[in-house]
Length: 77
Image 1 (tube, helix red, strand yellow):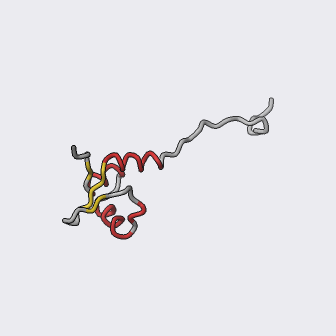
Image 2: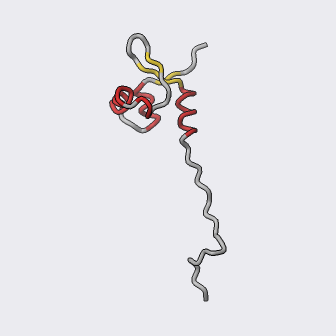
Image 3: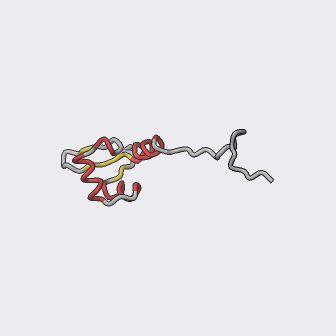
């Protein structure tokens, strides 16, 4: 069974980029993109699961701020 793929236009939509930007990155900076497959026709495809894994690796987890005992930002009454 063939895995779902994305072409450059679909991949651009997922990352909120323009399709020509993705094409430029493929040519000049492939390390900036998830792993891709180059077909003999020259067309570039991405496996959906690779794109999702690549995005997951770059997720920034923001923790809620914690008040430390030395936090003097309070005004004392």
